[in-house]
Length: 328
Length: 256
Figure 1 (cartoon, rainbow over the protein chains, first blue to last red):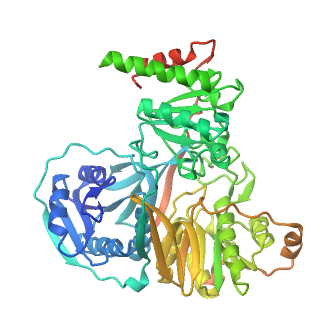
Figure 2 (cartoon, rainbow over the protein chains, first blue to last red):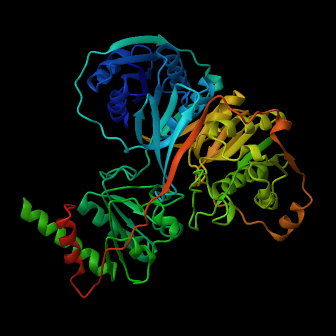
Figure 3 (spheres, rainbow over the protein chains, first blue to last red):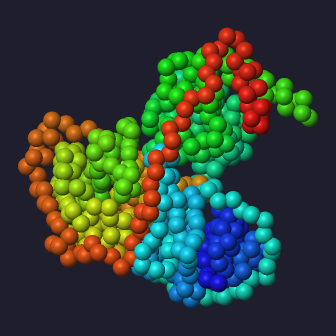
């Protein structure tokens, strides 16, 4: 069986985070999953045990004192060394900022092809084909790579689900990797975003409630948050609402913001400009409430309500509350 | 200080963009081509640095079809010093590896203190060109910045991370990429538009860079299809009970 490397995302406190488990599950379908983790010296054993519990048959621990103080360079070095040792058929990383940077540099360094922002992978005749959702889901593209292994693949966060695994005692390799800190960016203070909420992450949420210009003011945008909380949903926003200052840019759903694909997307006071639709049109169920009956959002909504969000949404929240109380 | 800004011409995101079904490549005829907005923001970031140090050179660099000169001229009209246009038919459909290598040779030849790019283009959205270019050039990358400043021999900024915002900094020369959270780009004024015509504008080819478009390794598109357009479903006009009706709809679809 061939090796499939996955880059594990390890927090400074040694937790395995992000889509690491989903990537290990995916890799196990096609070969021997090898998790690569870069940690400060001495922290490897505990991390290896955690990765084994997630199904990693082999773990490559790269130790470097700058693991959490230099930007991606130690992880790149660890991944490169692991690639030389295991001669993998594919390398899977999460399509996050760090994952994109490491994949890009590793592709150049290893002379490997890279297929980015992948939503599905198939393997046949010993070759991988990756599926990409392009232009906000308007097009589906399949791609592969010429020129042999390894193929580097970055996976869109949330696209793969972690499957149940049998915990294993992994075969652990520990190596010390060296990095010149002057050749990498240094990480400094971390500032909490201030958006401390119990709400799910917008990118991977199963439900999203977004507000648009139709909310009318920043104060009234709270209605969007109230419905989101009633549903256990993430809060999004149209670009127009961001430009008007109702919501921060971090919540912008659209072609130039975040692309979401939840089970339920509720658009409140959003007309549905093409730019916005490109960021949410692959949602499974789309609900829209807007006072303009000709709003383009209704062309793609499974359930559209023409009316005033300020009367409809409070009634909806109340009805949801009543149902939830009945269920208890 | 010499800043090279990487920009790209893309189909306008406010239009109905298409892929060519045969090749899977971007159909550049279907929608008006524009200078990618994230690239305009990158130019703005460079011009802001130039604003505090007048000796700064801002050079707009683009690998794009030969017809893309209007986009580069816009960068000059905004205030860039000069433009370099890498235009070569052999680059049509280039993957990120080839793109990054060709740009890196150009950048190396030109010389630089800082390269600034958008974090990802609105068409490809791979978001790896800045890191790939940094690897080719053997310099640090500081990517996905939401602010950027130069202090002495270092570039620094704030980058979005899982745990919040993290401060990052690197020695120059370096490659930086910026996100949509940077300030809106300035509009070219009349004086800028007039002076743009007189600014240096160089066109280069792959042969001049000594880069071979034929690759031992590449990403290839296997197939491309348009997803069927979504159609509208139920549409009601509120007559006083729409909130309750909507709750019923959600409950029936197991979405509560």
